[in-house]
Image 1 (tube, rainbow, N blue to C red):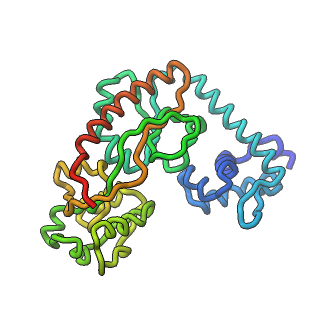
Image 2 (spheres, rainbow, N blue to C red):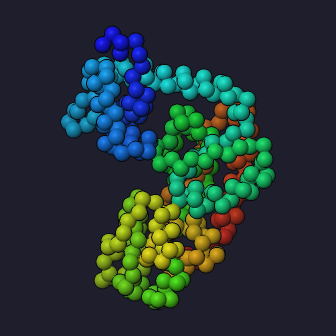
Image 3 (cartoon, rainbow, N blue to C red):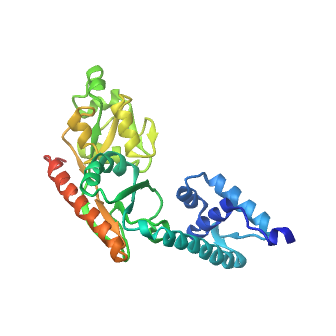
Length: 308
């Protein structure tokens, strides 16, 4: 035990503990670290075995820190922060030129990435680093300069509205050549593609369309709109997409919109940023002006007749 006392615990186990303790959830820690819940649980067990005492306990089926776990979290969190701050200080000459962006998969793949070359051409002095984060937003902890999220409570963060979204079915034109889709009832002849993060999409659209007698819960499920719409473009079936994320696909003909009926989603998309020092504000403001202009164009392009 004396040897262990003079050495460091496994880094992977410390990262798992830090994430699980902040969220008080192995599931959310797994999402943050992009691993499985089982992997997080395994790392916690390794750390508890290494230090010789439990870090977590269950109270009324909820996860909580033990007294010593709470004390240890403060030390671990402070250690990670010191490493993070020291790294930032060593890289301070790059702070003004690197812009770190966090976005969800559908927004990143189907809207932001196709437009980022324009930003790079207009701001060649800024190096973009784009991450597809799913976990809750902690800009200071993750070193994020700007993030794109669906509108929600953001406390002290600064928010700019980008655009709202509408939902509607999309499919490959080649699929519809083989299996016609002239009216909503024809969906009974098609495979329906679902998004695991929004399983009520088909239900909401079917209600707006007055669709009855079709099992709208059947069909494969995907963990993002980016995947479900890609499956639709490949001809697997009919997916619920969100405007404006399929604007480019509708324009190039890889997807078609069989019906004009669209349902409005409650939460629109927004740009979130926390401000910072003068150097950071310069690159953030540069990106902010660019994306707001792109969003304005998108709102105009997506302003098709809206029917329910």
